[in-house]
Amino acid sequence: MNFRSIKSLKGKTTRKASFYGHAIPYLEDVEIKGRFIIIEGPDASGRSTQIELLTSKLEADGHAVLNAGLRRSELIGQGILEAKRSFVLGRKTISLFYAADFADQLENKIIPGLRAGYIVLSDRYIYTLMAREAVRGISRSWSRNLYGFALKPDIVFYLDVDPNELIHRVFKKNSYLDYYESGTDLRLSDNMLDSFRIYQTLLRREFQRMQKRYNIISIDGNRSIIEINQDLQKRIDDYLANLQKN
Image (cartoon, rainbow, N blue to C red; front, side):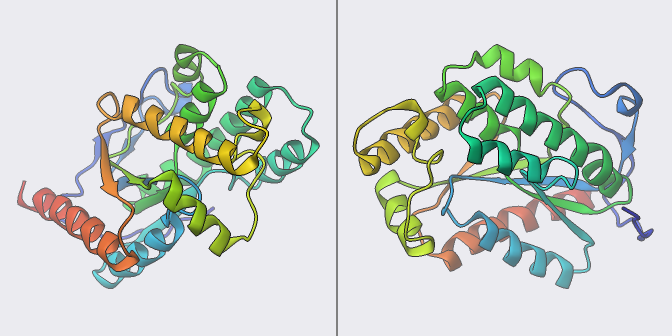
């Protein structure tokens, strides 16, 4: 992917990228000048809608914006879908698929965009992967080590939606419950609706557990699209304004 050069705005000074653990060797000293913002949240929480609205607003304000997200690697993304449809792969194998997808995007999309000065908006990040893995019994330390090459974002938002509200949104969006997003593989309940509630509650608790470690900002996702968007936009605008003051 080629990135056009953009004029560096005040506050977009070049800085060394920071990683959670050991970076991919040839990226460990990379310098970036863009900003990396994550929108986390469960399926049907409104992430994609918010990213679309935020992208339009930021571009209207003169920022160059690049979108990223889980399972978007041209190299690995389709393979993950096929693997999940088979229902035969082990939990750690699926995690390794996602890690490969993420590494490909980090190397070929996210970091090049940040080096060029873009604001990169990501529809979920490693936190969703770690939460899923923890709920499925995978060691949290194993997950942290697996994703240690991940770049530290500038801001992480989590759209916190009550599982009962999520059910209504999922049916409005898809008219069915996803096998994995309902935790069906965990055999939490014989009733898929109950399984969904239990699984989403467990994921929610994992995000609460990670909140302090990863500076995750919880956003009330039970509100309307407009209210959530106004909240997110104000926080991002304030953050960018503070950068320009310094």
